[in-house]
Structure formats: C-alpha cells, structure tokens
Amino acid sequence: MRIILKKVLGACIGLPFLISTSTNICAEKDFNFTMYGGANNIWSNTLFQFPASVISDLTTGLINDEDYIGGSYRYELFNIKQDGEKVNMYKGRFFGFRAKDLFSNIQYGLKFGWAPKFSPFGIYVSCAYQFRRFEAEFDDTGHQTYKLNSVRPGVGIRLTPFIGRVEEDSWSPILEVGTSYNYYFNVKGAYDNNKDQFNSGMISTFALGARNPDISITGGVEIDHYNLFNKSFTPDAGLTFPYANVKSSHITIFISFTHEFN
Image 1 (cartoon, rainbow, N blue to C red):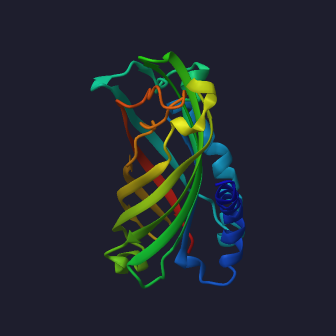
Image 2 (cartoon, rainbow, N blue to C red; image 1 turned 90 degrees about the vertical axis):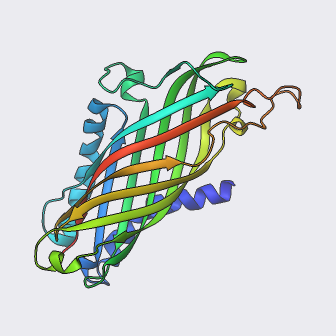
C-alpha cells in the first residue's frame, strides 16, 4: 500500500510538469486546466483560492500569455448514524471563525483535461489532497475528535454537445462525469489512531455547466459510495466491533471555474 501511495503522491506532484511539457507538443486549445483550493467554510475557502490562483496564473501566463480564471467553492453534507439514529456531530460552521470552523474540511487539487478542438468528447485526470476534521459522539467512545488525511486520484469524461458554438466564440452546455478513489493515509481519532477503523473508497462526480473558448463554469455533486467507518474493525481481538451499526453519508456540492487554453 505504501508503494501505491508513493505513486499517487508522485502523480500529484508531477501534474504541473505534465501541464507545461505536454502543451509544447500538442495544440494548446486542446487542453483545460485548474488548480483549486477549497474548504467547508466560506472564509477559508476564499482564502485558499489565492495560492492556487497565483500558481495557476503563472502556469497559464507562460502558456497562453493571459490571466488565469479558476477555482472552486464547496459545501459538504456529512452525517453519521448509529443504530439508525443521528450521531451528535460538530463539522465546523460555514460562517464560523474558530480554528475548528476554518479548518474543518480542506481540499487542494489539480484537474487537467484534454479535448480535441473539433470533438465534443474529452477526458480529464485529477488528483487532490483532503484534510477532514469533525467531532462525533459514539456509544462506545464518547466524544471524539477525528482528523483524517487522504489523497484522491481520479478520471472523468467531458461532453460538449454543441462544440461548434465554442468555435464561434459562444457558449455551449457541458456535462462532466467522473470517478475517484479516496485513500486515507494518516488519521487521528479513537482507538490509538488506528487507520483500520476507516474505509477508503470510491466517489462519483456529476456536473453540468457551460463553456466558451476561455472558461468553463460547472456545478455538481460528489457522492461517496463507501461507509467511512469499518464495520468489521475490532480493537480487542474480535470481542468488540464498535462501528458494527454505524453508517455515514457524504455528499459535496460544488461550483467550479476552469481555464481553457486557447
């Protein structure tokens, strides 16, 4: 698993170099790119856009000789139930100013897409780092604070049904469908920070929007298809299964602005 993680992290680090080298080989207008920083708090979400925008502006300025437009705003719907009843949680307040509000759910990612000029079909690869912090009160553990670090590589497709309108400097609707794998590599919480108490898993992304030759604007959802807590986890050699009746649900709503090379 460590080898897999190293390869994933290497892909994340190498994406900016892939962007700069690949555009020297292929037509620039075949590519789209965004680097985003987001959080589940309005203040930190806005703040985290700045370093991402600066890096992206430098990259696109070298390639396109123009200013960069990009970023993402996100809001999560995260709930946990035990024995069918909602667990008391603190996930950070959207307008809160405390540290546990500002740093409740942070994500930094890269998204690099390819779509030939005259084709309505395109593909993209992505890679993101996520830090999630929340507090929950379970029957066996009482009140606990959880801090989870994960890396999330993904792929997807993009459909632009009226590509001719883009070629005419107009707008076309677009559809994006993708999938990614969220892998937890460092955690803090109950049971001596044992990573086995959490499941990694797949996430689906669905987005609708519009694009012109310069930018695309999409809004959509990311849906987790896995239970965050491992029902078969036992801290005492099979005597207790603290998450046997625990189930989580997690959906992220987002709006994203992506720069189009042209």
